[in-house]
Amino acid sequence: MIAQTLFRGQAPIYHERMLIVKIRPSASEPRAAVANFAKLNTAASPGLAALASLEHAGRVKHVTPIARPRKGDEHVALPPRVAMGPLVASTERVAPEHLSAGVSVIELERDEDVSGLHTALANDSSVQFVSRVPIRYLMAGSTIRATAPPASTMWNLRKILWTEARKLPGFSEAADVRLAVLDTGVQIDHPDLVRRVKSYVYLYPDVLAPSGEQDIIGHGTHVSGTIGAIINNDIGINGICQAELHAWKIFSDMAQYINAFRGFGYFVEPVMYRRALADCLDAGIQVINLSIGGPGEPDPQEQQLFDSLLARGTVVVAAMGNDREAGSPTSYPAAIPGVIAVGATNIDDSVTTFSNRGDHIAVCAPGKSIWSTLPTYEGQFGFEAMTGPGGSPSEGRPFRRETDYDAWDGTSMACPHVAAAAALLLAKRRGLNAVQVRQALMATADKVPGMRGREFDSDYGAGRLNLVRLLER
Image 1 (cartoon, rainbow, N blue to C red):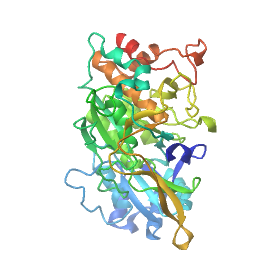
Image 2 (cartoon, helix red, strand yellow; image 1 turned 30 degrees about the vertical axis):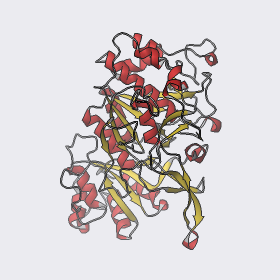
Image 3 (cartoon, one colour; image 1 turned 90 degrees about the vertical axis):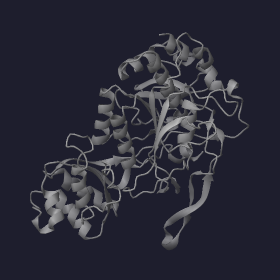
Image 4 (cartoon, one colour; image 1 turned 45 degrees about the vertical axis):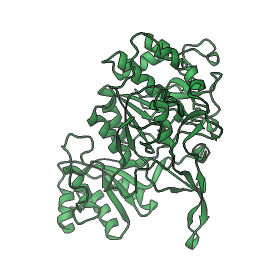
């Protein structure tokens, strides 16, 4: 699969041509610029003046508020200026205390303009913060194509004692636990996921990047199947729990050229991602699965969203990353304090050759050759690059994925095991907060041979997930 080899040791840190900025809700300068650029006090607002100058020169591609348009206003034109209009809209769509108030993503036509604009905005009294936008990408690895095994013989379920856990007194399916998958989308009518997805957000009419209902890459459908595929329906696989699934598509359908790989692949779309996190806050989601990551430290808004989710008690589970051979660079959001970071193990409980190590790891779970659902329609992980008109790269042959079911590797595949386990724990012990769930997962994990008797190891965390011990607690 392209996702692992695409970025191993070569992952870009920040989106090119992009900044995220928060305008102070009380700032008057953006409104003045919308009404009449001549009224803009360039001495007091050097950042907005620089942005306006770039816009006048045709070097601003798009400005998108993080806050969603009000209902009914999704297709209403913003104020006349491409840049200043959306900045003003970002302060008006939600209450001033909302985490998305005043926050927008600015996309420029040229990356060489980013540094100067960043400096100017940082020195602007109308601006609360400005930052480069860290890249987040998938944490899946290579595929192994074979005939799907019967659900009863899946090694990952045997390893975590799934069958035994379901026989415990007081076992609950977690049907009333709200679990969110923020990923590449999901096929809601997949035979093994029919009526399992309570809600699915994939439309973003005001976002420049295209996004449709289909899960082109298949990653989100694979993750969703591990968590919640229909149990004992005599087809495909069994999910770990039957929690109430909520899916947010946070990837655009448009592949981007990646210079280090010399091919086209998919990144998390920054606006979709931040809106989904904010939605999880508003919707009272109890567990979030994030099989994504990247080496860039969180920008201020991403950090605030995670801080708010964790403070509210939301259990956030994230993949450690697949860059072990590149020295295990720290990956976020797994490394955000309070997030449950998950590594990947083999059938013999040894750490996989790709799973990142680090002292922020909490636990590990099966992540090698994990069978799960894939969309029944065709899709791809990316494209080879061809030389297009004028020598620029263009999409060539697609890197096709399988359909229906397949075995994938990755900390992406380990992560949903732990998210599902957290949902089962919450179903049994209502009222636990994120800290308590993390402590319970670590306290009940199996100490594997590679830990050499230690209570904690930077390859394995506190050990490999054990559902029986967790739910007996």
